[in-house]
Image (tube, rainbow, N blue to C red; front, side, top):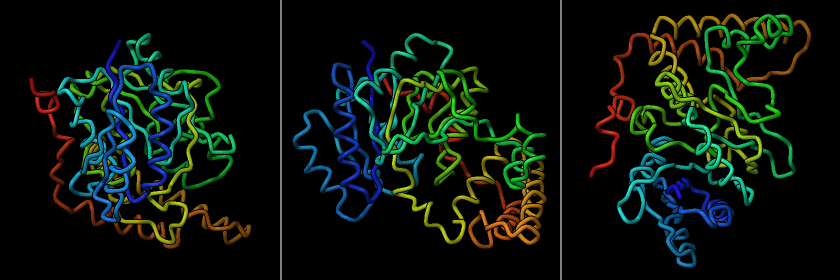
Length: 330
């Protein structure tokens, strides 16, 4: 039976994380699996609360990341922790602290990867607590998707329907470009080859980047329809309450485009977004459309990216990790 390491990342949501851990432990029954909970330097008593809860869960480890480096860095801490006996897992499964797998959800992902060697990553059908499906399967972002997403205009969307980042809800299991990381399983061998999460991303675009690196190395990402996970969403990030776009989102978006496509394409993507955004704002003025972005979003995006063009290239920790560095020590 393959070995599975489940990583559950907490940031200031201990009660939610405990609930997610309980659901995961049910779903892990019968598998050769371990659960490691990573507290991402919450500093609010989360670590102590989680360690207390874990006393009733044999074999579950609670560890500290030591710093809040974001989603990718926190999950990397759990992945590097490995199995308790020092052996390496065959698969790594990431679960958000506000995500609750159905009893068969994790097994379905594992079975899919075991029977589909072309797939390096597999993710679940994500739904709300009342059963409403969440859009978590996507195309890779592009210059054209920036225009389509910002314009929000029917004729433009129809013309660029094959470029829009969100995919229609898949009705069956199949290949996609990338998946949200709320419930995502990966082959350890793929991580050995491409490296772990790029820790330059604090939050957002890190899963996109990881799936793109896997695709470029010849590994597909699959959406597994019969692996169901309930998800609340944005509990740690507060995304639904943003009154201004945070700098880390702008940093992540720019880093994704400039790292993977070059600064010229990144700037072109920004200009296309600005053009689409201007079209939308014209419709707001003429047709009385309600705002769809946080206040000052378009201005913040343009100013940020023009400044970014002239910044030195970042020192990337995980992104520059070569295969030898990513591998486990013998």
